[in-house]
Length: 164
Picture 1 (cartoon, rainbow, N blue to C red):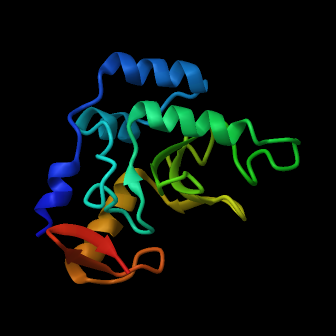
Picture 2: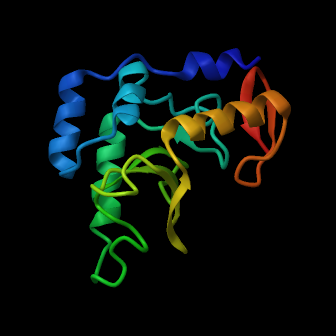
């Protein structure tokens, strides 16, 4: 259906890179996030690679680590910790400048493994999906049935998945 988007997926991440990312972020990645990186270390920086809603792209392990550090460096008080951003929210997809992203909550506790959405202007929304698996099921359902996901409707243009 969208062969250009499929072709934009990168090969698997190096297991050592995944281990370094966990060490650098201080987070034990949920198994589903590790498995995602083991399948694909992100997607190309192309229109075809931006196949998530909001022109977001699947991030590589290194890109996820860099974005985590960048957003964590913006935390200026305990009042915004875990409300606006948390250093153990690990992004797996982001738009071109990282101002919005989907993340997996890697904090120990009841939210561990849940998927949230972050927008620079308003902060994070935890637990939007129960897991990365439920997020990908919702994504697949939206694509297969041409229904909205996060307010966007999928379509194919130039053999690439896009969202309007």
